[in-house]
Image (cartoon, rainbow, N blue to C red; front, side, top):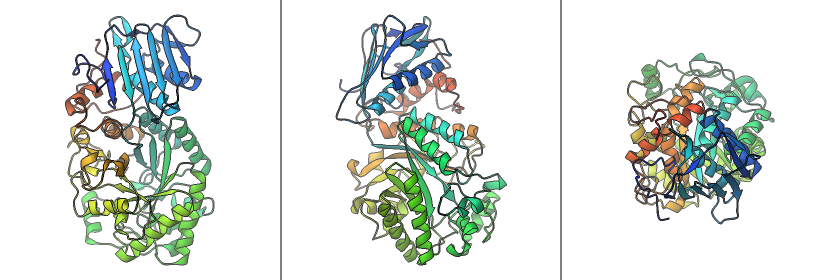
Length: 518
C-alpha cells in the first residue's frame, strides 16, 4: 500500500483520523450476522463487543462461541508502537496490533467502518496499515473555571480515546479554584475548592478520585498529565495560604475584561468568580513559596504514574519578568527532581535557566505573533520538545459559529470546523523540525462551559480535526488529508456518535449522513 487510494475516494467511508496507508479491495466486504464470531485478546474482544452493540443498536452480538466467519483480534510484536493492521473480506476481519494500544486503535477504526446497508450491517473490504504521526496526542479539560465530577471526566476520556488521542491534560488549579487533594497541603481543597465562575458550585478530586481517573485512562491507553498552574492563576492559593501570594494587580486590561464580560474584579482573600486572567502571582523568592511548590509537586508526582507534570507558566501578567524567569526555572527543576518531565506553557521558554528537556506547550496562533514563536523555540534549544495547541485552531472553547451561545472569540474570532482542520503542525513554528514536535493537543477551557452537554457541543466535531492533525500523515503526503475529504468522513460518523451518546453539534459545515444506506 502506498497511501489511501480507494476506488472512489470521495465516497468511501474512511475513518477519522485518516489512516496512514489504506486501500479498498475488491469484494463485498464482511456482513455481520446477529451472532458473529469473535476471537482473540479477551480485553479487546470486550471493547469491540460493546462498541459494535452500541453502533448497531443492539442488533449485532459478537460472541466467542458463535460459528462461521468472524472477527479475529490479536497482538504481534512490531517496531512501531500504537500501530495496527486491519484486513476485511467476505471471509472475515482480522485486526492485528503491534501492542495493546495498537489493537485498541484498530478496534476504533473497525467500529467506524461498520455501516448500515439495505441488507443489514456490513464492514467494507479494506486493507489498512496504520500508525500515528506524533507520539503525544492530547486533549485538555479545564476543571478549575468550572468543576466536573469524575464521571464526566471518564466520559471525556472515552470520547477522546475513540479518536486515538492518548493524553488527558487536566487543568486542576486556577484563580477560581483548587481541585486536587494534596495530602501534605489539605488546606488547598478545604479552603479553596468551593466556588467557580459565575458563583457556580466548585468541587474537588480526592486522591482516590484522581487514582480512579488515572486508572480509567490507562485502560484506554491514555496518560493523565496533571497541571498546577504557577506562578500566575494562583488567586485560589491565597484563600488557603495568604502569605504565599501577592496582592492582585488590577491593570487596565483586567478592568477592560471585567467590563466586557460583566465579570468582577478580584479581591485578596475572597473567592474569585470572574473570568479575568493575569492579575495573580505567587510571592517569588520566599523560602515558604519554594517549600509550597516542592510539597505540591512531590505529592502530585507520587500520585501520577505518567511521565509528565505540567506547572503552567502562562499569563503571569502580575509577576515581575525577572521574578517570573527565576520562578519557572525553579519550578522546572523541582518537577525534574520529583522524577517527572516538566511541561510549561510557551511563555516559560524565554527563561534562560529552565531544566534541560522541559517540554513547551505553544498556545499562540497558527501564524505566530508578539514573539510567541521565539519563546517556544527556547524549549528546543534546551533539549526540549513542543506540544502544539494553537489557540485559533484547537482551542475548543472558541465559538464555532458567530451565533453560538457557548464559547469566546478572542483567538482571532470564530473558529469554524474548517479552520480547526486547515492548519499543518509542521509549518507553525519556523526553525522547529518535525522531530522537535512532541505532538498536538486540543484544549477546552471552561469559562462558558457548565455542563456535560456543553463539553460535547464545543468538542464535537472540532476535536476530530485535532485528532487528525495529531495522528494522520502531513497534509502534503496524502491526497485525502483535505477539508473536503474530512468533512465527508466526519459526516459519516453521525450514526456512531449518536449511538455512543455524544451530544455533538450538527454543524452546517458537515454533510451529516443521517444513517443513509449504502
